[in-house]
Image (cartoon, rainbow, N blue to C red; front, side):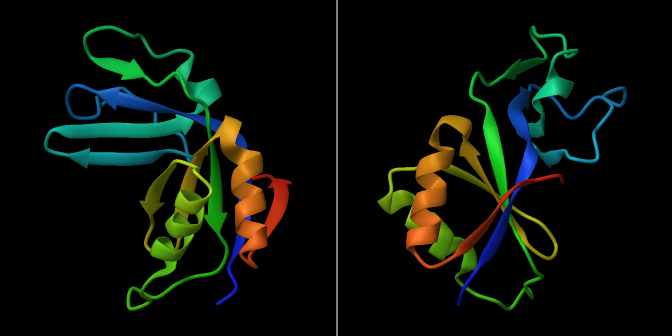
Length: 134
């Protein structure tokens, strides 16, 4: 199966909250959230993390991330797509954070590893569109 990805234009920062998402936190249309008891995290475009007050309620990762989103929709019954992609990244020593949506998967790569990730994916026979808007 040949996969096609697009690189989202924004860079992201991972924010760890010490409690559930505050009601007054404005969430971008480009946010990826995890809100499960004990794990309250949000991946936001880097520009949107500049106004967040650090302290006892949250911390922001120092790493900037880039998102590679799979193009096309995949049924819930499709097996092995994320496993194939993470295998490729693991073999290239590229760390990845995976967020699965309702119809597709999103792979966050440290911005410093983007060139290695793109090379690994293309060598594996998959296609990545150059950075395009989200």
